[in-house]
Amino acid sequence: MQDIIVSAADISLFHVAARELGNASQWWRIAQVNGMTDPDLGWISETVMLKVPAVESDLISGLPDGVSE
Image (cartoon, rainbow, N blue to C red; front, side, top):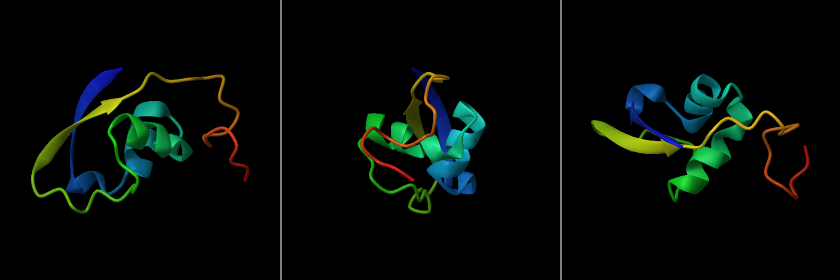
């Protein structure tokens, strides 16, 4: 797990997940480790530190267990 700095310019956890994990649909993993439920980052007024979990290449989709497309 690593720490990254994000701002409102990052727009959403979809964008962060695409950049950091290579899969925008894994936004929920970043949300989960940071106690968040909403992917929108518009609430950030300056910058915040977020934890980002390691890339898991064995995830077939970015969806959590029990959720289907």
